[in-house]
Image (cartoon, one colour):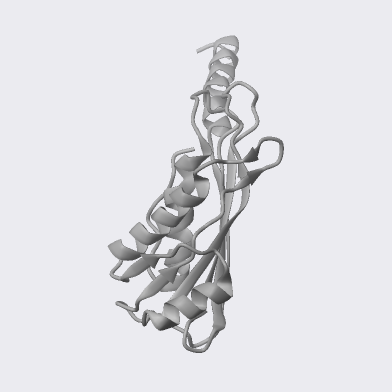
Length: 188
């Protein structure tokens, strides 16, 4: 093969790989746990209502809070923790209600970041960050916190919404708090 043909093939291979790099989603997590605190399987968990996420330029992402709350409830149930999705988002009210109902732990979460860029052509990726705090109901104290961020690919040319990240956000945050191995990974 001559030198010119080899260069042409090398340039073509590099060009073909470029869309793959542009389609890679990024992730990051942060966990703070009180030493020695492990939530036993089967512990009853009260989940506070989640407020809708606030986008920088678009205001509230309607329905995002309910979707996250349902995702938290469903993930806990699937892992053997009996959950109850509460009607309140207030911590003190939730702790009191959880105590009266005989729940062991309370989960409080918020969408720290939520950007649904709505168009696949602007090269601004969708991004979402979920923060979850775990409280011991009987002691009324914070046990652990977990945060997970997913940023979509700037090169994703399909029209999709940020709520596609909810299963991964929930699985990673709760998995680290309740000691299960997170398995959900959202494609871009």
